[in-house]
Image 1 (cartoon, rainbow, N blue to C red):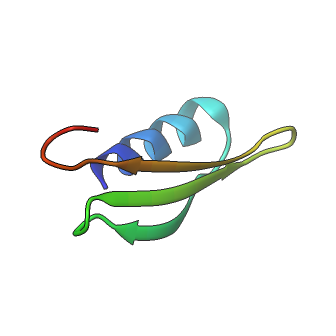
Image 2 (cartoon, rainbow, N blue to C red; image 1 turned 180 degrees about the horizontal axis):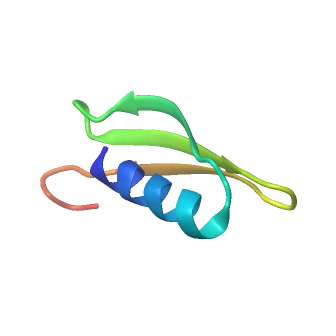
Length: 53
């Protein structure tokens, strides 16, 4: 969840986009989120297992 919060803060401040959290399963090791802007629609999956990303 920390990576999502960091990216959200950065993108909101510098990229003028608002990331959207789709699924927070950080207790199971992953977060699914989306960035949508004028020319961009990206879905990102960030996760880790045994301290590896």
